[in-house]
Amino acid sequence: MTYEKLQEILNNHKAWLDGEPDGSRANLSRADLRGANLSDADLRRADLSDADLSDADLSDANLRGADLRRADLSDADLSDADLSDANLSRAKNLLSSINYMDANFERTPDGYIVYKTFGAIYPAPKDWKIEPGSVIGEVVNPCRTNDCGCGINAAPIEWVRKNYKGAVWKCLIRWEWLIGVIVPYNTDGKIRCERIELVEDMTNTKTNHD
Image (cartoon, rainbow, N blue to C red; front, side, top):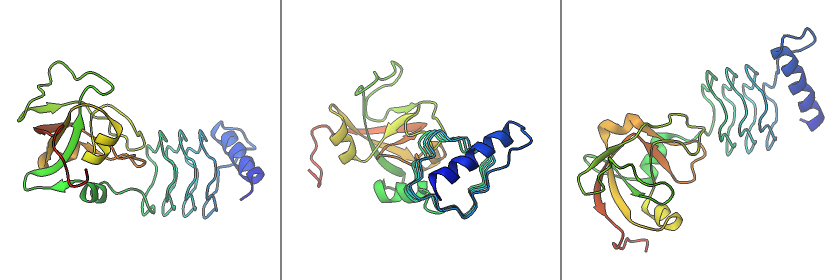
């Protein structure tokens, strides 16, 4: 689809959303939108079913109530997009939280092993006890299109050591706490969670990858 045609559709859609008589709902069903720049676009209630949105920039786009059934979202940037009430049934190539956790974290009888550092950007809350066996908690932002948000951020040990300096803790997310785990669609390696248990200070411990 040409840039000019896409802009025409978006302009008509905006007019439709504003209740203007000459407006029309965006019909982008089956559209080839590979690599399209739709950042900040207002696509509320737009029909994007079966559209090819691979590599598209949908960052900060408003997709509330949009029809994204069977849309191909391979490598699409969904950072801070609003997908509230969007129909994502059978959407293709969205990052699976289950697959991501299984591929990147060790499973144990009690839960997943993850790693965390403290004080790298923000100081740890005063009520957190940074010691083995301590259980810490935080309100978690549940929106998967937010790459960063409130919650306890954790990652694989290699990622933590590469991106932060300081103490690295081995932690446990117990199976019963998985409901509080959020894996952003465009994660760079981090997940965030509501509750973890501190297991061991790994700062001076070598791993097989060191």
